Length: 155
Image (cartoon, rainbow, N blue to C red):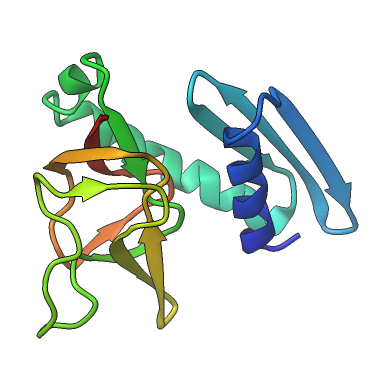
């Protein structure tokens, strides 16, 4: 099972009432569990097993450091998170306008940023409707999988 298929499964679980799904094939087993708007992916193959362990420490450190994003989350803000590891860009090209700024109204399907991964530029679309109130990542910065990128006030 490739990364795109796993991301597609995460989207299906997010948009449904499925609490947990497990899929096993020749490459390994993937289990996706949903808890209060959070999806956890556990992967067994050796090629994937080392990466989540290595990423857990930096994510924990980075989420523990900024106390400000934790407080607004309690005020009913939604988070747009990175679906992959890569480099975060707010523009499609250096001479193009910003895709999203604080105050920008977003809806499902609206492109809010680009993440470059392995020389591929992936458009990241909003899955929520609302107004961006905070951009949590600097332009041209590296991002981790599931790292919060934007805080959105739902409409």
